[in-house]
Length: 151
Image (cartoon, rainbow, N blue to C red; front, side, top):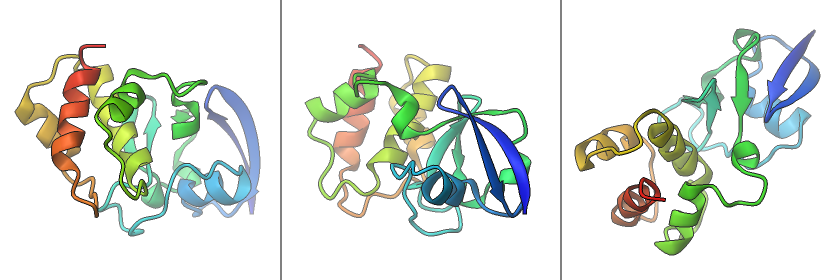
């Protein structure tokens, strides 16, 4: 076990965990931030997506020992009131069905728009590729990302 000082959602947190522990489990089990979901465990589905210094990152394969001084943002830290443009667009387009993948989808979309505020259809598809939605709401996801780019 080792002590790690982390910046998560703008706050300093300290955890005492095995250095190989994936950030997904540090967030969920040690910090009670359960919005980040476990999907596949091999960084292929996107359910566990968080931001590391603003970049969409799969937390299931990111060991806590690799975080260092980087800033972590989870779905809980995206906005205090759920009023981030991507969250608003998600509601406007009625994107979620089962909802399981939505935190990862929203985190990926918000990272895209932070780095590219006016993406083309192809850029949206490329950025969102690999975020799996079992319910198949891809058309609504793409529409919501386009709408969020105008908010």
